[in-house]
Image 1 (cartoon, rainbow, N blue to C red):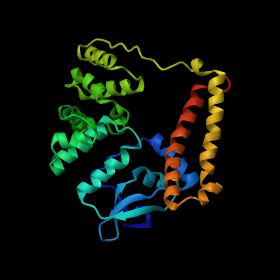
Image 2: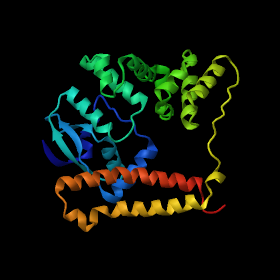
Image 3: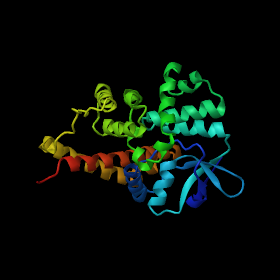
Image 4: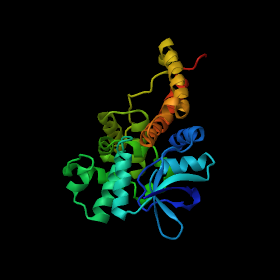
Length: 285
């Protein structure tokens, strides 16, 4: 295992690429990288011919490239295909909630490529074997040629929960309509019953009714929300300055790496929340 600076143009995507990144999330992370640099090394494995395959750290590589950087810090490891996939899964699990699509995709790779049983694959997420099929169905759905042609239009539908996906079952014969309903379910945060109601209405030719609505901007125009935005702006500045504080210089390299890693993650998340709040609660009409 060795740590080195590797040119981004020498890092290839893996065959089994787990993480889905939206343009919005990537833009937020790129802002963090531009402000603080890439503090957490990505993980790669060498092909022995001067090129590397990314194992973990997709967002860091893409964000660094978007921020105009030519190299990223990377740990070079030796790993089999199975070990590389498992490392990618375990790297993502503590950081965020994986979508049903991502879980189903990873389960399918484990089962089809590495002969895992459904029990063994489900155990990684504490999912019962009897429920694994539901996640596999999500992953398999997006492999359909008529769905693949949607391209970026599937970005939001892929965030739907496994229960929301099951609720759209009545639209099985109409994959394109199913994608549209999943997008609506995510954007409007529909309950399972509401999602099923929309799907059944479309399947029967009726006009669907959706009751869930986003909150009006007027509901966010309060002094409390304005105060929260001010406080969060201060927190954001604190995150930007964390790497230059005197305390950092007194910590062990391992502790510094841990702190900066957490800060990099939280910086992007916090910046996104602040922008959303500002959009919902403008200072003036």
